[in-house]
Structure formats: C-alpha cells, structure tokens
Image 1 (cartoon, rainbow, N blue to C red):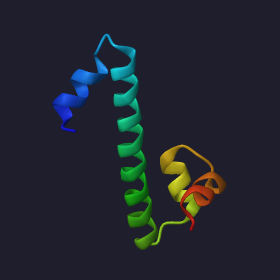
Image 2: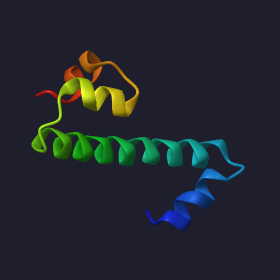
Image 3: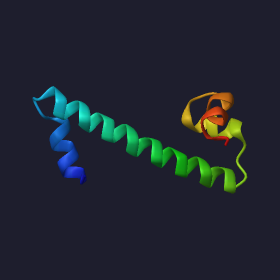
Length: 67
C-alpha cells in the first residue's frame, strides 16, 4: 500500500477501512523498529541505549528483539 493510499484510508469515514489502515501502520512500524534495533546492535549499542532511544526499558526491548 502506498503512502497516499494509506493516508486516504486513515481519513476514511468507514471505521473498518480506517482500522485496517491502522493495522497496516502497526505492521510497518514493527518492521522498521526491528530493522533499526538490528542496526543498533550491529553497531555495538547496548540494550539500555536502544531502550532509551525508543522510550522503553532495556528489559522490554530485549524481550521483544533479543532473539
């Protein structure tokens, strides 16, 4: 889904369309976060540094991404 299409769906008056668009945003955000965390770890960042940058605890980010 392209950016313009997603933006239009988010503004939709149909709740089902809007909610599906929100779900798509969540999935994209999760993918972007995982890639950024992987890059940070490859660059030698600690879980604490990553958690601070994301505004969460180190335990939270490690639990989510520390596979």
